[in-house]
Image (cartoon, rainbow, N blue to C red):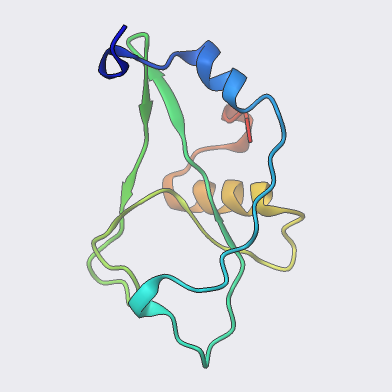
Length: 111
């Protein structure tokens, strides 16, 4: 089978997230937007994988044009952590609910 023919399914996706992985925080910023005079603000996003018509799709949002930061960009739902958030998953879920109305009860966090 050619790698271009591979279509990930739910079983494949679950197996990829079955083992815990860790990652180092990115502290170099995001290129030209990095400002050394500003503290890095913890944030988290949700990468919603939705099953539609038997296929997995990824949900993106488009940020509104009037926003000060990242106006009009395509993004995953998420944002800045609040002190009341227990962990990045809770940050991502709270922000997702605020941005697109997706309730945490409808989400299974895989990783």
